[in-house]
Length: 343
Ligand code: SF4
Image 1: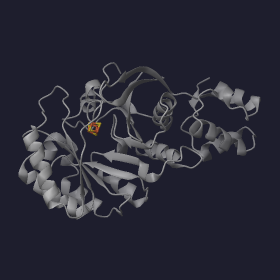
Image 2 (image 1 turned 90 degrees about the vertical axis):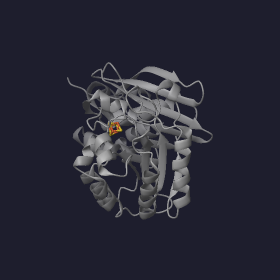
Image 3 (image 1 turned 180 degrees about the horizontal axis):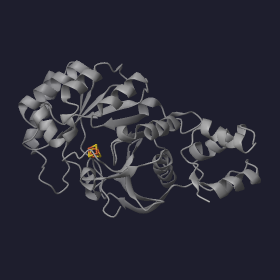
Image 4 (image 1 turned 180 degrees about the vertical axis):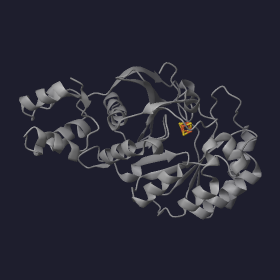
């Protein structure tokens, strides 16, 4: 008998499973809480569920969708990179970063990625498949069981383009947010996109309320198309126009992400134009000095980075400037460095 994944089912779907088996639907909520609130990955430990139902689930469903293959720890920060294997032997990575009282987990949404951003190691792998909602959530559950510190923030910035796996990503975010699930505030969940315009529209129309991060990475279309080829289809103006509709407030500002690449997007003119977009969108600008992945792209020197930041600060009226000195560089766990070789 083929086993389906029970991890990843939402409450409604679990109730349908119960109904089909003539089991009272309140059991669905109990199973849901065991999985998502208590992070139990052995069905037999769900001790308020009747044995017959536990046996039914055990015989028909897979509870744990991922196995930990390897854990790498940074020597310099409290950062761990976790390599997971799926049931069909695909490899994905997630990163757990603890800094003071924040525990941020960066998760993958796809195996590989089809977007082909030129500065990203995942892009170089090509696309293998979408992750299921269960596989997305299991990254978090494994990390939560691995660490003593409670998870405070989730960022969908690992392997893959979350908006090309929109339904499973949103379903997982809804379970993470749900008070019977992981009970994380909407503003603790950030979904990042390279600019998949129809899905940005859908996300705004559906009033999802999770934080939205856009990998802008250039201020003119020629440069952006060179480093993010889908810019040919959905260019900077189209994206900015759509983002202007985003109902921004202090707790939920759009994040414009800007990977700073030597000689590509690090000029004074780029900094001026980026400030213009920042003031227009009343957002956060997150500058990420590039992390080496062994290709033609390089990080600008400190003087150029400082000058770029200085211009952003000088022009700052309605935006905030952040600089992300990535964590876990020594274990290739920093932004854009996630990649697996044998999947
Ligand atoms: S940056 Fe994101 S969207 Fe671009 S190739 Fe890498 S994983 Fe895909």
